[in-house]
Length: 70
Image (cartoon, rainbow, N blue to C red):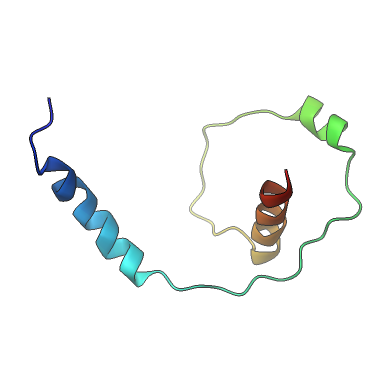
């Protein structure tokens, strides 16, 4: 059972991080070319390997555009 007020203690560090976030400008997404959606979905695989490398801004723009319109 979680005590009353425990949620605030858990969320406080996240709030501090969120205050440091700044908006970024992303380029226009590339929405032409590439594989057909059905091929992409068929070849999709999940992975649990993560990298410390930042995502290229163009890739971020493409992912956000695709997620928004899906």
